[in-house]
Length: 413
Image (cartoon, rainbow, N blue to C red):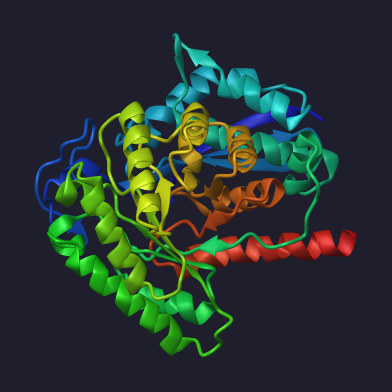
């Protein structure tokens, strides 16, 4: 089997690109837009419509393999690659990458993925979004060639057992954190609600009082809407470094606040993602380690999730090696080639750190479905419902792909 032709098309992603630095500095909502000036390089305004580039590989048997190049909502923040715009990258890919793909024999996924993930253009690697989409298409091509599911290809090439069991799904609410939490509870989502706590005054409170109130409401709401007491979802809140904005580096005081959050969660396991953002990878590892140490000293069982400055496979290994957190978000588009996602999940598991295979609301249906195969093969502890911020659509895409895979795997047994 060979790749006969390559087609690239501009597309829309499931959400928007947002200038995180501008939002942290006080950019406020104006309807669905934001007021104020952009801060991050290449952002012309605080909120920019999300884009993707679809890669289609026409194979010699007439089948078509697909992958979507997509970048995270907060592009350019926390050490991530800059804004990814189709008008800029399609010409680059046509000139520099398509010639390498055309006529390429479809061999092993890992071999092809590593080749294009390390491809250098004028001494620089391709944008992570480009590598993300290209390697999705190469995995799909391998699966078509071998007449297997994508997860079966991954299991075979990494010598992993094929396990026909669900991976817990994590729902994200966006700013509609009350109504969307209701939806998650009614649908029995395993982890919820993300909550998008990215602004101190609007969402956290100068003393953390707004988040405390929300967590208490959420715990009560779970019990109110779901009378089945066997339903025990994890509460997972992403705070985008805002704890550091109100507590600074006083991690003892921060641990006291974590204790209050734990009590507000009343029996549900609680995960806090990105409590601080100190501006560098080394600093972030040290800060999370200090916070985790303070929590253990006080007997607080809230779990810390690493996100900012933990972007690449190398970053993930360093955070794991330092035992700086309880869980790592493997933010899928930031890793470039999707083989890095599989290897990162496996590395976390070997080091007894929970692997949350995340990503972004700004992905597409194609990338989300591919990610389900990766999570089920590598057995991540959690996978994000994506794309979009409406919850229902992303949950439908991820959940239904998972159920289709499970049905086929169980039938083959």
